[in-house]
Image (cartoon, rainbow, N blue to C red; front, side):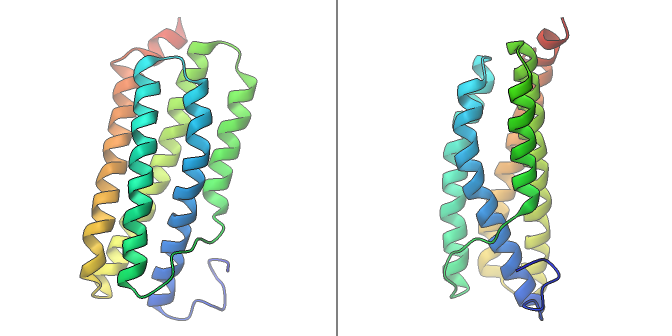
Length: 169
């Protein structure tokens, strides 16, 4: 089902599609993070990515609860946006030989993913609130707050932990 699909007739359909999109995205992220962890050489970056992989699995569990509360079976729908971000990250990583530059690229790729997730969760929360689905908003808010925190941690790793500085030297 595409975003402008005939299958989306109501705001509830749109919310469900958005939930399926983020569910798919989170699943793809759990597949992509181990490769990023393996490639990263900065200790803080590696640890941060490992922690976020654990968080992502918990986010999927929360999304399972969201589907349950909506009396829907948890399922994903293809998300070309996340597929493209992950593909781009893999292409860039494959082109960089300098490990410190690679760490900076991994941070940038991870932040692109975080920004997508922040945008998606923010929209889903607004739609859920508008539709009166207060029972799912707290799950979505928890995921959103974790994504924002992950982005802040990536900023810290890039700027204060020296990843960008080391890559530039």
